[in-house]
Image (cartoon, rainbow over all chains, first blue to last red; front, top):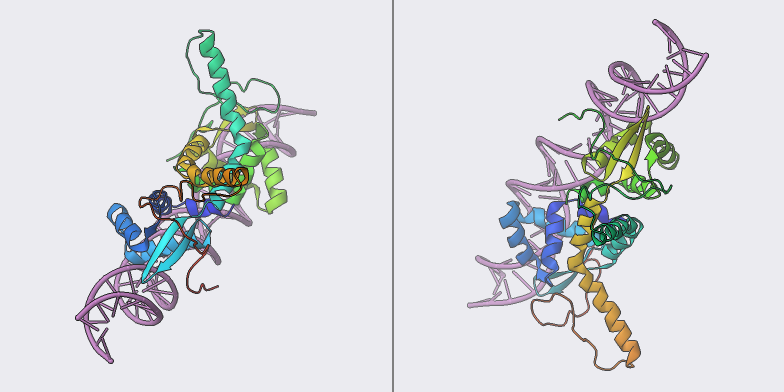
Length: 134
Length: 134
DNA sequence: GGCTTATAAAAGTCAACGCTTATATAAGCC
DNA sequence: GGCTTATATAAGCGTTGACTTTTATAAGCC
């Protein structure tokens, strides 16, 4: 699950988004990223390296250009990792369907699923119980 | 897409996995994580805080216990983010199906996903072109 | 061969992160 | 009230990470 590490950085996520439109040269990616994030060419090159080394992209040389492309394996791993949580929102949708179907009012469709016990999860605060600082 | 940041850490991913089985007290999570990673209670507490602050969990107080639960919104965001890449592997599966079904004629039905150019994606190396160090 | 373009690597800096130990808060229990 | 349990916060520290500037490599072109 190494991939999550690499995806923690917004620049790298953006690079992948760019590559999702198809193969791109390092130069093209660099230009786009420089424009958006205002970082140097070496900085982008370093991000490309991380993406390479984490298996998120592949590279292909063509003359002096390097053509980067998305490599899906790690993304599929993440997708698979998410599987264990899918029930949490699918369940919700089902519940919502039911609610809508029987004309119940659409109040508070928020509220988490999940309990191992069949217990209704009660109301929880979505960000701390006591006081939060900063 | 803040969530990717939080998920970059293996301890935090593990915590979410534990919570995917249902609400857990901080204590239960701490015990499990301590056993697996050998880190201190405050360390786990700090990870729980990050998860809370990034919206990946919710907390609910019950006496002196804190009950943590998975909060799905950020995970759904990631799921949605992955959408743009799904074509990359779904297509592969389709291709495989078709190959099997019609005994391999006419390959490249639809070629590399996303290609802005219509060019065949060719064979790329999955990790660098030149030499890699370390 | 020498200049240029495309890209990576090297070396250094500074901030953020994850951990530790020490301490605070707050509920339960005697 | 005072001890204990459950959990969080504070402060300090070493490591990692994302930059920077500088320099190397290598292909194209004259």
